[in-house]
Figure: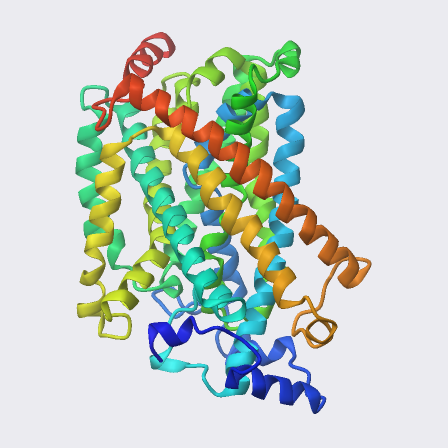
Length: 489
């Protein structure tokens, strides 16, 4: 099946839809189990797949938990400082709950997509299977041109996340050794990422990397919580609010980035043996996400609100000691894994474009190198840590985590017949009425406040940084880091 076929417009004259409609008219309602692989967990449990071929619920949880935080864990305290605790904490929990809901929508859309493909006999499995991606599902169920637009936004979002990992690595290493500039660190580790993480074949090869990654974030979360308590918590810090609307939306954008890692959801769902159960697994990943994001963000703000607002990276706030250095090293390892997790879907798109996606690994994997080189170049061009996070949240995650899922869901299930025969039914009290009303609200809210006001604040911040530091900045915010290391050391 060609790239164009996979984005074909699903309309009533489409043979896929005709066959599906006939099946439904005959009373054969597709079930969620239809989209689950026959092998399932009975044959492939969590004890297998350490080197590859891992697709259990455990692996989906690992990938979702590892992908949720990334470099954002280190930027969240600053985001709380920008919004203030009174606005920041409710926004954190609100965005996380909305995110869980839209994952359910994406899971439902995937089940609908796969059910139609299976009924039409066009679903490819085994060695011929192509990775199912965000734009494939939306383009097939909604409209080909909508699929192309989704693909463009997805590429921008995923590449931005990859860029943020490279910048975060160079920033962390600069805190370790201020004698080497951030630009030099970016050059060195951009090359290392290109030569290593580019060659992980698929999401069924990430189990051991995800476990190592989660170890790093768990240690860092505990370290930051303990450090904040040692610094001393000031109750007056709880009353500090945002100084401007720009700061409020910048902070909210980072929250969206923390809880909006939906761009790789379809690849994770597609790698599961029981994909219909992904929305059951995903909320449990948030238990871990809350642990490594919320407590330390609140406590750091209570302990040191002025320094927290000054630095986009939390390492600028904490004392210089061996525990901090261990945390930095573990987070650099985590960011290596996060880079691979988020850029792998872009690798898949590139492979399909250059027609290497179904080739042997020795042809397919090296063909990804141009993508890594592009990300490396942009990380050198605009190495503005907090600005990149804000842009990802407002432009990428507003669309991919909230606007696209709700809009597509409203379109696909706009008729009573489509709703009655959906493979995955609503889980909220009130059924379809509640589900569709909430979709409408989220679509409007994030289109206006996420994309609209969020992009306004992010672009203003980007222009200010370019004006102050210029492009290809040698050492963004380095003077402050040197001063902090001196004071905190």
